[in-house]
Image (tube, rainbow, N blue to C red; front, top):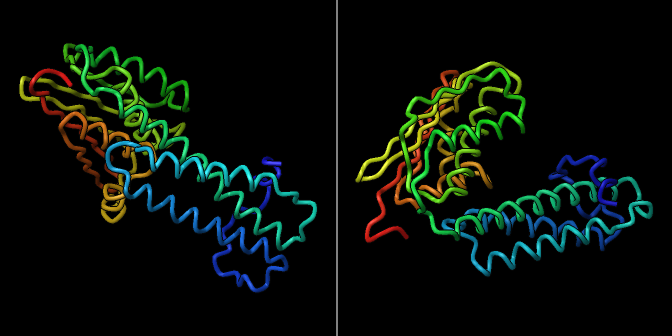
Length: 258
């Protein structure tokens, strides 16, 4: 039944007057879906460090609601009701996908951020292979010069941060299009950094400000939280049609590794 929902028109009917809905129960379901979606947006805005128990329970309730929506028998609805169910199905699937992603990020960020020293060059090489496999990035040239840089960070967290950074860079260039991505890093007794620069379309100033204030689930959300765990910050510089540079800074752990 879930696949049938995805074939329906997912366009949000924000201007529809619910008094025209022939089934009051369906109108109640739509209202509930909108409330759940708004609650999820509020939860995402409040997500700063990692997923706590209360947030995890909230996300589980959203996933249960999505499963209830999929159980609706569309054959018993008229065309107008089917369109509304298409909207509900689209929103519920979005909520379920974001719930999974948030839970995954929360679990990852609960792990200690520091670890045995890792070769950044080796980690970059592994991640480039992953990104090339997942995306059509055959025409993108990757450059990394600092082969001797080592970082005392947790391996899985570093790997995921690099995957998000390179995935975003490839998307900025355009999947299947030629471009260039430069990677660099450094580490000293005071701390270090990872920098990724792409030759993509860049980000307009208004959108860049919004992106930094409310990053999407995954992507910069994960990178920003990881940089905070490393005692650093996330910096993004971008010019329209001149590419984007993302820098993740780190502070050396004090009192031993955490």
